[in-house]
Image 1: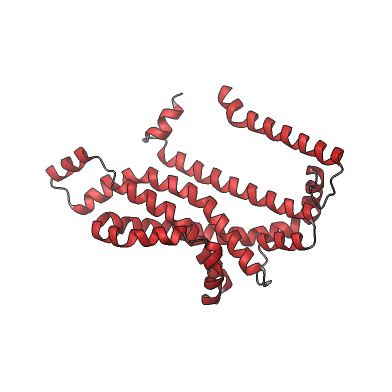
Image 2: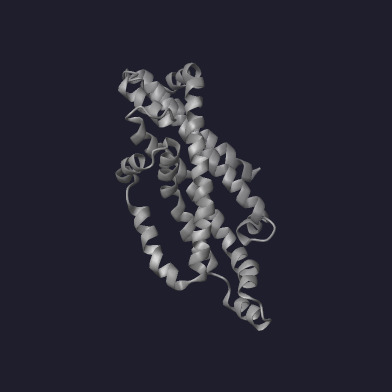
Length: 262
């Protein structure tokens, strides 16, 4: 019961209290709806505009999931190559860092111009934001194999492929899954930012474009409703990835087994 209280009931109680205070403040202060809508106004907008917003959310979600899948596959392969050659890692890892720290807002217009297919352009932008945590975490994991176990594998004449598959990959799996959880939210952010850039020209109908449209029309309850859907989507992505991570690691990794013994 204590764990249920800490993980479910307590956050819900805090959220309900926050919404109640927000509702009271919005109504008692007399602030116009186009400046600060009350939660009831946002709920009304969700009810009225829900079908169109959900349709736009599906567009954004499709880009997000495709970018996350690409980040997981390509990022994992890059990390694998880095772990096999220290020279390649030293030569190319700084460029991955440069690509990560470059603001996506600055390069998204160029990508949209260079890549003529809108979906691929948005996918590329979201992938650039999402791939680095997977590359970085997985590379660290592959290089974190226990030295004593490495010596044992060599003592028994294990090949380089056997060392990689039976020792380095299992060691790196928790790191990869941790990077995947981070990249899930980043992929959503990258998709939204790319849609903001592309949406200024009216080329896309993702949820970010609906936010821009609501802002231009001062339909602030609809804007908050779209933000709410984005937040719920981000939370859902994280919870799904966290569930997958726990299912994969629960029988053998300390980060999950120790928690289950409490």
